[in-house]
Amino acid sequence: MRHELKHRISFEDQLIIKSRLKEIAGYDAHADAEGRYIVHSLYFDNISDRALREKLDGTAYREKFRIRYYNEDTSFIRLEKKSKHHGLCEKKTGEISKEETLWICDGNIGFLRESDDELKRELYAKMRGQLLKPRCLVDYERTAYIYKPGNVRVTLDCNIRTGLYQDRLFDRDIVTVPAEAGTILLEVKYDAFLPEIIEKAVRVPNRRADAFSKYAVCRKYG
Image 1 (cartoon, rainbow, N blue to C red):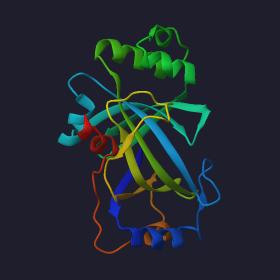
Image 2: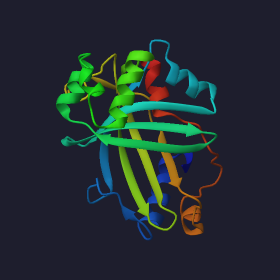
Image 3: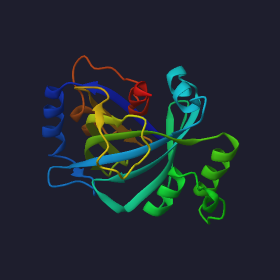
Image 4: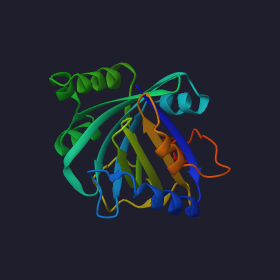
């Protein structure tokens, strides 16, 4: 389980934080020379919007499934289950292919039940038992930093966009709209402790912890 802190920050805050972090932390492996990459995600929810409602209600234990890839590289696609328990986060991940993702979007999920991957079998059970289905596309630009002591990961997300009533994760011709114009989200994830050097690097005045959810803001479109 990991700690996760979120803050909405200004463009000026982002410039300051980047200038500090580039001196002490490395870039994420998915990033370009400037530390940036594009995240494409497909989130699941059920017919009663359970994942959305639990997020908005601040339910102590909640979970959500998503399928995610980076930039335009469909050779590396991840099925993820993110859980939150009294403020601590856990993420389970497994590989999934483009073909399998398209099967899921078409409602052909029998292969999940036969998989050797426990996470795929769990997704199958919840698609059958809880009526989970692909629900919402979320795209955004991320700059990510890694600091090994404390297993710290700092990300800066911006340009959050969503497709309107779409679940075709790989269709780059889908029209997307800004979900939260101008928002820049700072996230800090760490294990047992947050090193002081990182705490100081991401500190900006008059910013408080936020429960911001990219999935939730994208769902306002449907």
